[in-house]
Figure 1 (cartoon, rainbow, N blue to C red):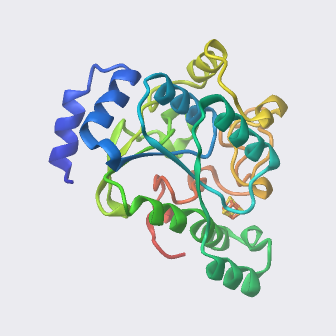
Figure 2: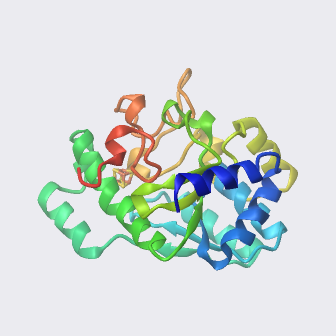
Length: 244
Ligand code: SF4
């Protein structure tokens, strides 16, 4: 894929609703399209839309080994409600063993470089392995989630993963729209949202959001807001590096 292809697809889908956009992506990529989710609020909305549209899109998630129990509970609820088994991708055992053996189980607290290394081993590389078999992926990225995501687009060229297409159907939605949809369609969501969490990742790197913080303020709360990406979405400079 190249920039020209993305531009054409962007123009062709400019006025499409989110549902029309998802249908078009499936027409375009068929079984080469995969939905990747960490079961955040946007992710469950997209899962629900895909189910209502009866699109046979594979759903995958990266199990970092450090997820909160509430996220596993949600996975079960999603599977019960939609009858769809979520494919879990795990980090490479030897890479995790090496990291933990060298730096301990809380290496990510030591500094940005170490945190990125943990994210790389537990999230970025497993995702890379998943996406190596696909032409396009769907994510729940929205512009309003953080300063790092303000420049996100509905369609992007994912250069990091072999120039495949990244689709962000809810990129222009607000947090309010997401929650209105969840309530309207009775979509299962992570119970941590009821305890002040606004963005949910691994348990030791996520806490409830405080007054005045943005949606991702509870993620890696000890870091500068401009670096709060794990590397999966590649919206800040350090995320674009393949190695820490
Ligand atoms: S969010 Fe934290 S525990 Fe999870 S992969 Fe990144 S640094 Fe490691």
